[in-house]
Length: 182
Picture 1 (cartoon, helix red, strand yellow):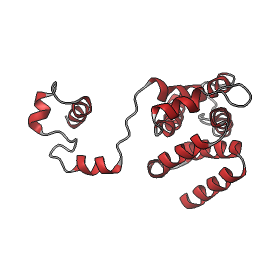
Picture 2 (picture 1 turned 45 degrees about the horizontal axis):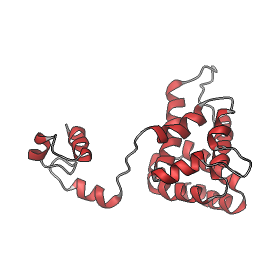
Picture 3 (picture 1 turned 90 degrees about the vertical axis):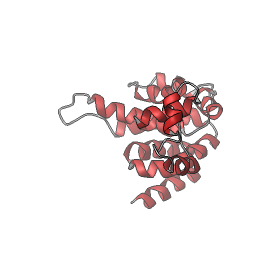
Picture 4 (picture 1 turned 30 degrees about the vertical axis):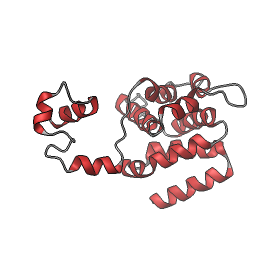
């Protein structure tokens, strides 16, 4: 099933940027997190290569959110489901380095609009939230080599117990890692 989704996505990429962006948003909203963990960085990089990627992505996210509403059968909004959708979409964008993310989200497309312009005009604000969250927050992606290095430490965060007690003199990421271990 995951292979079929990835093949469909590759086909969409070759055919049409708008279709790729919508398929990517749909995949991000529906795929298992394990699949996104493996392919998220590569998908985000491919997305950033597209012409008019930002505006196309915003429009694609809008279409995907309409086709996959976060409402139970009674029609009332489900806040947790909406938040999950926002976080999944922003997590995908969080794989990009800051400069690439800013270009993707804030660069004007060929029609003079940014992704935020497109998202602001959509009937619901989830797309706008998903696009702005990685810009305004800090997202940390720990890549494979560092994961292996961190896993081999006594507290599994790359900080020795003695250094973790010192706290203040440790670099910020190590302090954060020590707090996660506690």
